[in-house]
Length: 282
Image 1: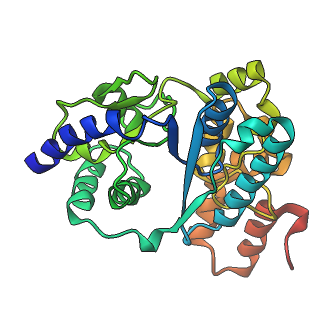
Image 2 (image 1 turned 180 degrees about the horizontal axis):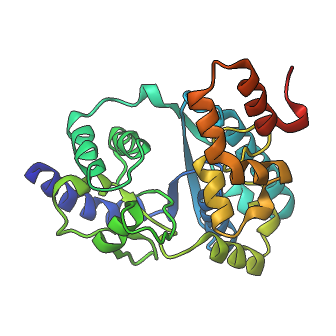
């Protein structure tokens, strides 16, 4: 891990002299609330150029919907603020399976995962940043009350940059150094705070076009996946339909039915009724 620590010191110098010279924000844009807020704030308020990157995860059914959201957001941005729209470069799309393997990064991610809740995306995102030789790729991790997740780790191990983002402190070593190629621009904000800022600056209607659900049903949020649950629990349940809210409230029972009674036609009918409501396919 000493090698990783040495590399981080080099990345620190490169970051300050390279990525920020032309005031270009390189960001992982998922079409979700946090990253869309950052894209809009950077272009609309700060007047910066944005270079967005999107990783296609073919194992998730929401990828096409996320790309649709990004396209729609750009279209609406052009109507409301053409100058901001012109600051957004073409989306750079990369399939996840084309990201080079890196055993050192994957090993560090595996070790970190034993100590905290850490999604698999942090492995391949770190490998992606390294493969592109980027040293300040923005990753939108928002404020979170949980004490055993990535937010808690980053809050303890990052420092604020002159640009208002956060980055890993130079003295951090070990497995956490896989985050050295990232900057974290919304680490201080909750979703509700981002909403208030968007209202203040006049781009809330565009931000509301962002997407969050991983398992959409009939093109609408499902109410049962983790992003849907987080959206409700953070006081933004207005973004889900009444059916989705019902599924959110009954999602634990739905999982039990699906796991233990999936082969029973009678219980399968109950499961489908709860999940799809009157729109279920017979």
